[in-house]
Amino acid sequence: MTAILCLVFMQAYCQLETAEDIRKLVNDVGIEKRDFYYEIPFEYTGEIIIKGGVGGETYDFLFDTGGYTMIDAAVLQRNNFTVLGKQLLSSTNGLARETDIVNTGNFTVGDLVFNNVKAYCIELDNSPKLQCMVDGGIIGSAIIQNYIWQIDYPNRKIIVTDNIERLSGMEGAVRIPVYLNNNLQPYFMSRINGRSQWLMFDTGCASPLWIGDKDAENFIDMALAKTRIIGGSVETHHGKVTDGINVFKADCVINDLRFDATPAYYRDGSGLTLFGNPVIKDYIVTLNFGNGEMYFKPIKEIPVAKQWDSFGFSLEYAEGYYKVATVIAGTTAEKSGLAPGDRVTSINGKKIICPDFCDCWQKFSQLLESEQEIALTILKNGKPRQIKIKKEKIF
Image 1 (spheres, rainbow, N blue to C red):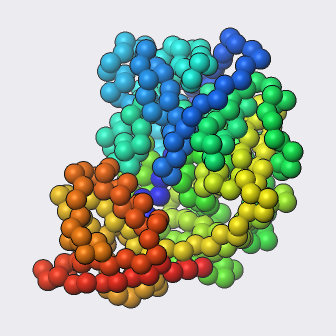
Image 2 (cartoon, one colour):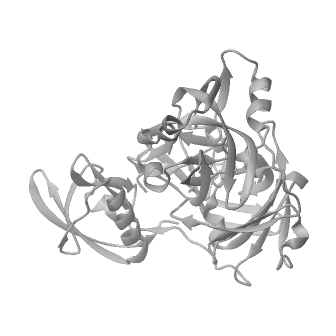
């Protein structure tokens, strides 16, 4: 993985108003319709992407239970939205920017219209992977909070309704109590490696578990396996920060659900502990935050036990070249001499052809997901070298 994309709400520091005033302002969202049921298609590219309408135009938005609603600066430039104020926002990777808060008026998701939606203005140009997936911004917790959203990954649809009785097939779903904090972020209790731990359910995080650095101190000494991602990075809507990312083996229990041998990622300076969106591949997830609950129903009768297997490296297109982006310590990839920054000239004997970062990222991701063995030709000290690597179990 070149970057772990964890897009969550950031702490807010007000200039002109109190934090509570700002919180009430951005969380004040409503709809006029009642007794509704809509099915909304979504795409999944490591993030949940749905269509949203703002300013009379339709854009691709990330569906993010842990974040504020946000629009790209280009959307703001096309519309005469009222700027309500500014706020300094700090993200999970340590970046901070002063951000406009704007009133977008009506905001549509399918045929559902949300009134009086406030959004933060972000620069998607700062976030290369996010820019590959969305052109509108992020649909956040203020929109999600009061209604029921069922994420159906096999059928690539989200059902949104205000009456849970209108949802079929809820038999056998495991209910998980949820606590919403003042920022409408959903938290639930779990046990990680035998210890109690609050987790935020964050559909904007592509990692199965992301552990805040303070919480990680409770687990790393007793972890049965651990490693690090050399050259790893964390990308939010503020941009990308590259440094080493640590990983340990976690057995996570949520009520009667078990997620064993799960990679749990952490880095210095990241304070939030998250349960990310990969769970939707194995469970139909129903969010009913207004009633303080969500439900996980297995897509198969018994979900297949997971294991973390990988080639031990990732690739990216940068500065006009195809490069190794990250390497997992201790893997065959590292032992064979691969290092971040190595230039890649061919894959499986074929020259790499893709015009830009986004096209390469999609092709590389599909390749590393689907193949079990891969051959790279890289340049080391200006000389070509061939390396063959098989996918292996990390832990």
